[in-house]
Length: 111
Image 1 (tube, rainbow, N blue to C red):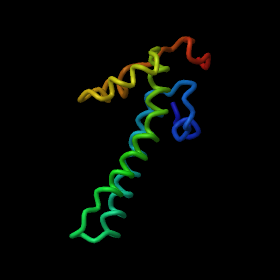
Image 2 (image 1 turned 135 degrees about the vertical axis):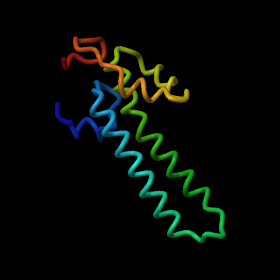
Image 3 (image 1 turned 180 degrees about the vertical axis):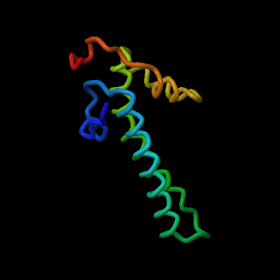
Image 4 (image 1 turned 30 degrees about the vertical axis):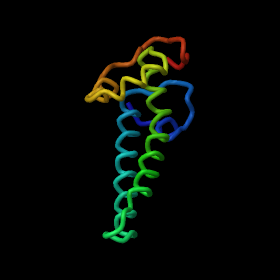
């Protein structure tokens, strides 16, 4: 199984995302948030309140992660409403380790 980078970095809400692509997209977003946080930390005054730029970074990463989560829900055979489960602790483990449907489903006929 190989990583489809067009799927990993896509902002489309349609289609499906398998476990490996989902895991790679989460790792890329964590790395992006870490680098962005380090840059914000290095470029702002340590004695000032730099919470607004960090808030913007968190919102940007959250918005970028939403389409991948929706496509992962579609791969599992669930509607996008299941993204609300991601607000629960440890729910990300379900999205990473649960096997997707190997047959066609109502969200995409890729398989």
